Image (cartoon, rainbow, N blue to C red; front, side, top):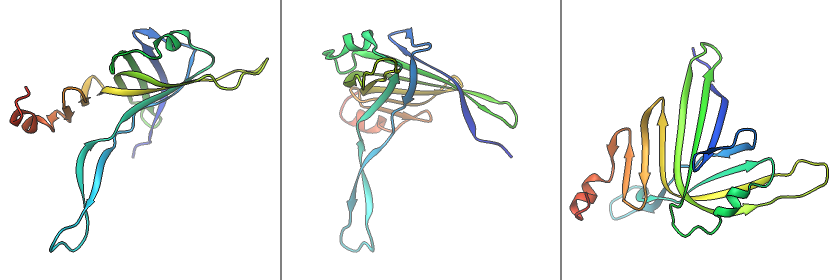
Length: 170
């Protein structure tokens, strides 16, 4: 029997700069697909058809204003900001540790300065729209999504390879 893994340590990097002692929470991108109901002649019910990925985003909160993030606001390129999350997850029953790494490229969509009160810790939040996503578990790439290049690799299989080949990509 195993116990659930608990996040024991984490770090967020922005363009290689670590946020040691500054980042409080990171909400990793939720992988969701755009699905639409479909029912046609002879079908006894509805199925959901797959129409690709929904937008990806990453959110983070910090213990106060982050000047480097503010300076990145309005960056022109859709993949102009490089962020990297690293988490060490451990099971308490056997001590096994797994390393999870999420690499994203995007641009900041929303920056919230939060309430400012003398003598109180403030919170600075950022929401980043994602154009590129990679999930690495224990050094192995499990998911890689490059929206601009039409790449969607899951478990080592490029789900779009055949479609991209037909239209002359790669």
